[in-house]
View (cartoon, rainbow, N blue to C red):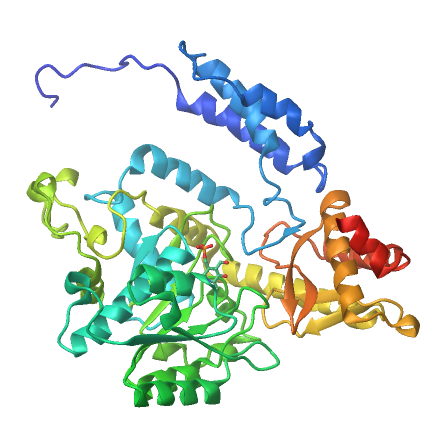
Amino acid sequence: MAAPGTPTPPWPRTDGLAPALARLGEALDSVLDRPPGTRDAVDAREVWTAALTRPLPETGAGAETTLEELATVVVPHGTRLADPGFWGWITSGPTTLPVAAATAAGVVGGQRYTITAFNLLEEQSLAWLRDLCGLPSDMRGVWSSGGSVANLVALGAARQHAYERHGMDPAADGTSGLRPAVYASSEVHHTVQRAAGVLGLGRRAVRVVPVDGRGRMDVDALRERITADVGDGVTPIAVVGTAGTTNTGALDPLRAVGEVARQFGAWFHVDGAYGLPGILDERIADRYDGLELADSAIVDPHKWLNAPVGVAATFVRDRSLLVRAFTQEPAAYLESIAGEDHLEVGHSLEAMGVPYQDMAVELSAPPRGVVVWSILRELGRDGVRARVRADNDLATRLAGRALADERLELLMEPELSIVVLRYAGDPARRLDDDALDVINLAVLRRLRRETPWLPSDTRVRGVVALRPCFINARTQPEMVDAFAAEVRRLGDELADATAADLVATRR
Ligand SMILES: Cc1ncc(COP(=O)(O)O)c(C=O)c1O
């Protein structure tokens, strides 16, 4: 029964979500349906910049006008990241369901706390993702905004673990009691160094261990470095293994790296931000051998699972360690609902649910679990596996094209869905690496400007590489063939100019 004084619907409202979302959906679909590569041609930058740049309005334009501006000026001039030919970085366009789920979370999800379906899905989606990625079943997680924060949270747990073993609490008292070190390969994502800085360990506490010819951590060098440090009075806090490096998709030998970490009593963290879902591809699952040794692991659904940007998980075996590392201390304004007891309360606002606010660095945060839940509910393990396999197949296909074309060079056998290759020129007129670097950078610029194919670049063994990363669910195999053909065509054109001319053109 309604409480006295409760108004009855329809109550006054200024807009309706259904027509607004329908209009927006139509605008988004029309952008996504445009043939790849035509996105930038809609209007010159001056046109949309002029249309959007204005002083703060004193009088509002109203919902309808604003929505139309969003649909006709903002949306068509967004990023090319969602294009099926965008293969730069490790980000791509989200698929439909996670976009719908994120929208729902923005409207009735609100905060991730209190006893709601969204709160329940936080925990359930973490457990599903853990199981999907083959992580140990005793691991529990917490969501955050991306791999950067997820690595920070994991290393926060590692720091807490190491200091507590020496009777210290670094979260409360700071880190001056030990000389800490973290070990990671030269291919580790640089967010690990930043996390070490933020955690008060210092960026220089990250010891960079060399890699072998395939981009994998050299385990003997790791052991030697830790042995030398320990002899010097340094405390090894953590060893970071990467399951899918950002540059080439390489996997560190997890078992060997994990065993060295154990030998020295260090925490073993696995950065699987990109590559952990690769374990679903049975053809390469053995490359993840030793994953069960991990004390913590991260995975970013906004990479290989095609969630919209802003969702990553950190998993640890003991979340109470996270609470000691990240507790935000009691707050008077939360006192009446603090607590985790969500089974016995009747009303959503009577308890916070799982206290995620004490396990990482955010208090206010959207429910992110619903986004990942929607992906896994839609596709199931088999559906995600099919996508991962298809992406790995694209990489194998492109590697095959490069090997078959004497003017292309495959710089490393792909381990996952990243390929590193370059235009290598006519074998009869072999150019040196400096000239090839200039040509390949010029190829990249022309690919960006003139074609739908958008890889990024990196350096492999000192030379410039084109680096497509296949994680976009809309990429088709023929696109990969067209890309290989374009690299060859543009490379041939550019090779006709001298390296010196190209250097001059760049200035
Ligand atoms: C292996 C790895 N770790 C961490 C990150 C950082 O993730 P994010 O960009 O989500 O912060 C990336 C980003 O590409 C990555 O590839």
